Length: 362
Image (cartoon, rainbow, N blue to C red; front, top):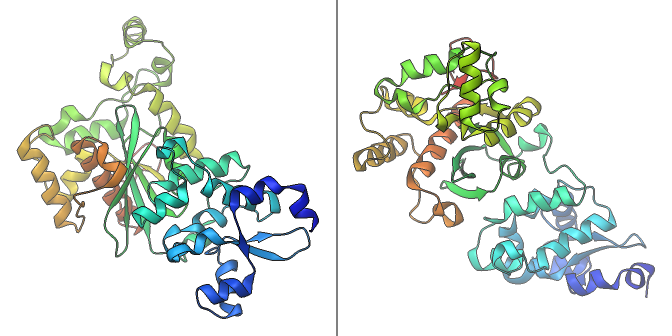
């Protein structure tokens, strides 16, 4: 028995039996060279023993599950040391309370998809001490993936668009979790202000956006300044604004304080994150402001028609992402539409000629 097995028997108990490269070749079937290529690409989860030999957890080959697991999303985000590789494998096998007690690998096998595991995997990778984001050159090897994120009841609903695939969606508790779950996204449209105004001033982007959406102008809130967001309540913020002779702020915009502040450092550090506003994006896609608000039957169906005209068909069952309100799913979908335009170099800012931060993109 080698030192790896004697020093960490608990990992073997969690992971289950493993096979060597020849065993993988028999199961796929494939040549040893092809097994090595798939391993190097991150499509197979491989563990390196203390003696240098490579072994593969057997669970990933059951019913050809490895094809659907998207293991490369996780494996490529880690340094393949003994400890981290084993932690990935154990994480896939362990019951997870956020999956109703099921193990991630079992969820994949039953659903035939790697959703809703991407957010959980990214969170796990942070806990294991590695940045889950991939370098841009690695993203180029995959079909273009973009995403749109919208706040829903204090959480985030995220819609993903990928070449030749139906729209998908997932729910994240925080914007940090949402971004961490999107290592391959070329652009991410976020329905949240990015770039705060100076004290006592209106953002030009908000002014332009209100004009752009016409009858839907009330859906565009004026972004509070940092000084106002420092207050505990909207009432306190408005007392300060009045005392300083600044414009007041709506309770709805102050209610997003937590989300507004969370997005700022993320957007500053990640140039894939762009501010969008759903009504602005819908008006751009429709060619004119929408006639009906999203709270109406006509408004919901008009927005679905606009999306479908742009080739975005939301499936009847969106999985966990389908738990969100209809209007928020539609907003996230049009945010993803803007992200796709941005990724293609077709995005347009308000005001015209603006840089990424401080503008609303469509």
